[in-house]
Each structure stands twice: as C-alpha cells, then as structure tokens.
Length: 265
Image (tube, rainbow, N blue to C red; front, side, top):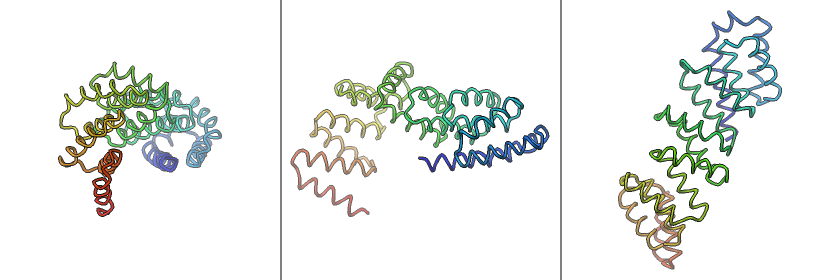
C-alpha cells in the first residue's frame, strides 16, 4: 500500500505542475516558485512534516492559486491532516476538477488507515463516481477495514440504516454482524439482499460464507456447488468448497476439489 501512495503522490505532483503551470507562473514570485518546488520534492520523498509549514505559508499568501491549493490538499492529506485537506479540496473542486484529482483524494482517505470518520467521505465520493474503478476499490477497502473496528462497526450500522439501497454498505453490515457472532441476523440480512439481487454471484458467495460461519457446512457445500455450476470463477470459492467437504469428513471429495485447483495452474 505504501508504494501505491508514493506513486499516486508523484503522479499528482506531475499532473498539477503541467495543469496549472501558466496560471502559477503569472501569480507566484520567483522565490515562491522555488519554495513550491521544494514542497513538490519533499512530498515525493514523503517528508510531510517539513513540507506542511512551507505549503501552509504559500497557501496563506496565495489562497486562490489552484496549484498551491492542490499541493496544500495533497501534503496536508497524506501528512495526516485529512480534515483540513478535505475542506480545501471541497473549495478547490466546487466547480470542476479532473478525475485524477478525485482519485488522489480517495487515496488521501485511504492513507488514513482504518479511520471510521473517513467512511462518510469515501461513500460520498464513490456515489459521485460510480464508474471510477479505483475510487470504488478504495471504498471497498475502507469498508473492509472498518468491519473489524468497533467504532467502524457502529458507523457501518448507522450507514446501513441511512442508505438501505447501498449494496456495499449492507454487505459490510452483514460482515459486522458476523464479527459480532450474530449469525442469524447476518444471514437474515443477506437473505433480504439476495431477494432483491438474486443473480448477484458475489452475494451468493458471501451468503455461503455466512452459512459456513454459522456452522452449517452441509448447506454451504450445497450453495457453493450451485454457485460454481452457474459459472462463478473465483478460486477462493473452489478452495472453500474443498474446506467445507473436509470439515464434513468427506476427504476424498475434498481432495478432488483441491487437485482441480492445483491442476488448473
């Protein structure tokens, strides 16, 4: 994950140095242009503690300069001050921002780790960019982190009530219920989701996982076999089928399933 953040920060710096170059050169003094260059270099080196006071000074001197403001967002955001970065980002992108900037902001939220407060923000961003795969991936990652976090669990439960039609939120809440060992509630919630999305194979797979977690391995085998016969291609599901058969003492069947995975390589 660290390498991804380094790449994202470097690309963001490169993108903005071209996107705002003509505007910035007409507004920043030569000395301040040099300071901004220092900020860029420190950002690429991830030396945010050194870069933050420098970009804050430039931001105060050039509050309407887009290049300075975007650098402020990145440095403050990746430097751990994501709320300040969010405020500046919202101001900067109130009219229009490029897709790369929204993706970078998603990674700023991701950089905070399993921080429950970022859930509302990444959900909002994901809703605004439903077709942006990288943002959707970050959304799913932040949700998964918070499933095991008590504060995150509470936020996910609140979001599940607030957004009953958000499939990812509802799936995450089912996972929360499993973490809390409330298997009956989790399966009931997943049944409701499946009734609305009967062709969703990922949901069916998650349902099989819930059934297994509840200890009903016979039912899990039945669901996994049906799922795989319907063309579900995740190797994890095949391996899970082998595990479920093994737990039931059906080792010869399990062995055949495991061998299928090995032979497919």
